[in-house]
Amino acid sequence: MQPRVETVPAEIAPLQFRKRWWVVWALFGSTVINYINRQTLSVLAPVITRDLHLSHSALSRIFGAFQISYAFTWLLGGILIDLIGTRAGLSLAVIWWSAVSAVTGFVSSAASFTGLRFLLGIGEGFNWPGASKAVAECFPASERSVAVAIFDSGSSIGAVLAAMSMPAIALHFGWRMAFVFSGLLGIGWLAWWLAVCPRRATVPSPSRQSSAQYFRNWFPLLKKSDTWAIVLARSFSDPVWWFYVFWLPQYLSDARGFSLKQIALFAWIPFIAADLGNFGGGFAAKILIARGVSVIRARKLVCLISSAPMLLAIPAAQARTPFEALAFICVVLFGYASFSTMGLTLPSDLFPSEVVASVTGLSGLGAGLVGTAFTLAVGLLVDRFSYTPAFVLAAALPLLGTAAVLWLIKDGRDARPE
Image (cartoon, rainbow, N blue to C red):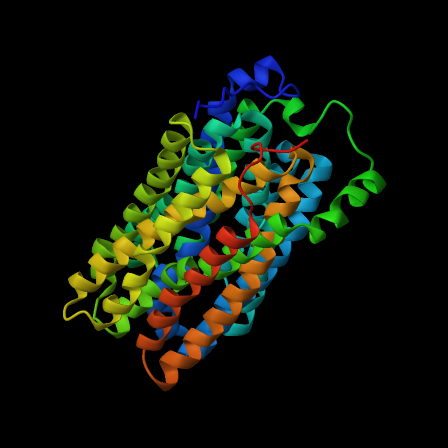
């Protein structure tokens, strides 16, 4: 089988295509800041729960408030970005979530915390649909998985930076100032984004659609098996990520006796493994395509291989030492991130750029709703039993997502049908 020759999509202006890597690194920056903002609460949860006298169930409701708004904004934000473009959409989103994060430093109750986390999710839900759309507009199919790996790896780097820096800020200035600091980061990014993202990148095609035309194209997406494959893959794999993002610092404190300083020293390590998984999956797909494997089959193979490491969540729960548990969790997050890179790339492979953000947003809605249910379940399970049942569920769910990809997406097609 001969490798397919990739060409630059006709709708991409030459200037935009030459600057595509600058754009994707700016998207990486927004993802880093996005995760620093959301991880500030997770990293400082052991201190905040003591200060505000929160149970695990109450903490799960605060996490859940973020996930609910975040989930719906993936869908609505994807639709809005398809209509107004990535440049304007992401600019407004970063301004919103930065302001909300800064204000969070002044909360005094669980109720106000819950409300502000709900507002934070509204802004942060724009990031991935917008970034996926930018990749679809700027990259040929053979390069998309690497581009997605770059911007999506910002989630791991953001989690690492939050785990390392927020405890230090909290220890020196108090946990409230950590939220204010994280909120200020978006100001610098906004100037960077406006400088590197051409205005032409906000136009999805030479003939921009009206709102009525757009929605006529949108509703048929719900009838496609490809759409539901992407939705189910995300819905059953993303709860793994949410579990470790939200609960790892609290788990290390509760079950392994870590102090805030120890959390700062060690809680970031699994997210480095996730970062490696982003690039491992991205480059694996690129190599397979270069060797003649079709684009869709390459994505599916990487998804299948990536699902196996996530099963190691089960021995992680039974590990004798915290460092054995962290080692297993590192492998789990490597597999998750590799799988996630494929899940975020498939919309641009299977759908025209005019609806990529919407398909990505729909998958984010499903992932957010299932992830919210899982997060609330974790709080109840930990309060009544232990963390072990949550680890077992986190191992089992991705198998359903993998089955959806293998069964619902058919081989033997071009990367993106017209």
